[in-house]
Length: 285
Image 1 (cartoon, one colour):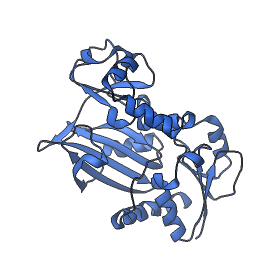
Image 2: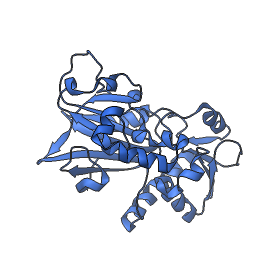
Image 3: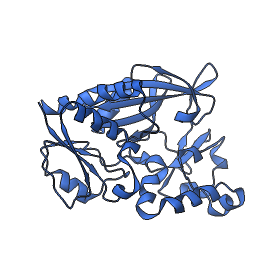
């Protein structure tokens, strides 16, 4: 059965981002290949009839007018998850004076270091310049904690070493640094889901802050039950959860309802997204 799918972006993302910067672009290709009609909406000024709306507003907190707009559709994917700030789900937050004195990581409270929010108010050129100059030690010292990308997150051996401004800003969180290690490598587990379909992998790296570009191995794994339960409690119909396993429990680092995609789609990548795209049927039954 062919259905009409509308994908809702923030109004400003038409000029700042390409749809293939996101995994949703690859899913849209799969749906079109399956005979479905896919429409991209930018902002809430114009209503487009559709059987399904995918909320894809790449902000840590979804604005109220977008939530109101989504109510006009019978089926809304990710309509229930409106806040993915780390303070909304993290169980390892450290606050001043709480007695914790182990290693900590200081990061943005916002998704993806707050880049989506900055894109709404600043040009790409201004952001690039700011990111470069913030790496100069003298400039960094004057500006305090600033994160150009998640690669700028910082690990401190003790909470006593954390700059005071880390505890003074709602845009910054301090978390217990709880890495998972295996044979001398740091591990990060990634759970992707769409409807009743999911993929789950573990990446390993010599770097304690693991990114796609510094991983040394990757393997498929089963998702931890804690993550499956968190996904349900957050109403995450579509997205990604990054976590590690410590002492048998999952420690969640990041929840992303608009996961990105970098580089060309390789054959194995296309197959993975065909698998996820098939989760659309679970919303239609």
